[in-house]
Image 1: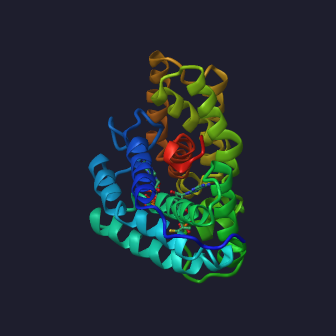
Image 2: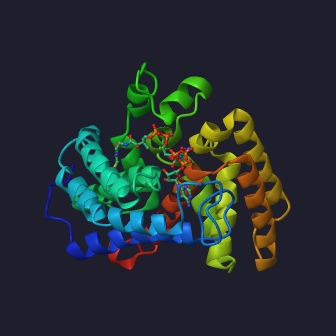
Length: 296
Ligand SMILES: CC(C)(COP(=O)(O)OP(=O)(O)OC[C@H]1O[C@@H](n2cnc3c(N)ncnc32)[C@H](O)[C@@H]1O)[C@@H](O)C(=O)NCCC(=O)NCCS
Ligand SMILES: Nc1ncnc2c1ncn2[C@@H]1O[C@H](COP(=O)(O)OP(=O)(O)OP(=O)(O)O)[C@@H](O)[C@H]1O
């Protein structure tokens, strides 16, 4: 391992934190999204609205530099030693989110993924390694080795939705994606989004199309928790059909998303896990294009 040379550059900490916050805001503003909260409606959610997401993102914001600095401060330790302390911080951040939303879960999955990725930025910078999407996801994977075995495969009397769904359907949810290094993002969503952008597709349309791609392939525990395996299969089929029909390339295609939103609302389905992976995709794309990270 290279020696630890310096504390993280405050400018990098500030700018990367801003990209993480902006990814959350960009995702919730993106409209229309099937079943999710957006600028048009609250999708299949009765307990939250757009402003809850803004308050939540603002409550999470001060934690983002802390995650980066924490990752940097433990850069001399093995990757497996990072998660326990990060977890305590993640729970503190979750508590601030719940205070900001009067107890509603707006960003629990997003905090988990962005917390891990921000800590990975700090670790890579401190080790003077390139901050690329691939290196970040490999670092998150190293942080999370053994997580699904520890938290999902053992019997747990006070189960979360994720733990219950692992036992019922074998879905590994947010933990499994992180431990595997976000394969749906690295192999699918990020290259897809970047290809669309290179073709000159409008960034919002490209993000919506990328959301459909994630929904078509993600074993989203939010969807399964509300609709069971039938609900998850239905949602994946619907997303695949829309993509096969040409996806979202022009403003006129937005009507298809509006109609999909109505069908998700009628079935009480919301792809919150895919929304979280879209946030990860947006964040990684922006990081890969950030000149101050020295990746260009
Ligand atoms: C792992 C978490 C998300 C536990 O939640 P739970 O057991 O309910 O897991 P579950 O897999 O159902 O996911 C929770 C959220 O993740 C998102 N999600 C669901 N499915 C997926 C998926 N396939 N991919 C990515 N995200 C997903 C959704 O938003 C969902 O609400 C997390 O709350 C946790 O352990 N927090 C402790 C803090 C911590 O460890 N932080 C570390 C980094 S800051
Ligand atoms: N725009 C969005 N709309 C809804 N959920 C989102 C959005 N963006 C991200 N999410 C993710 O979805 C999760 C919220 O989903 P959901 O409300 O289904 O969970 P829950 O409160 O645990 O379950 P339930 O509402 O079924 O009781 C959050 O953890 C969040 O990370």
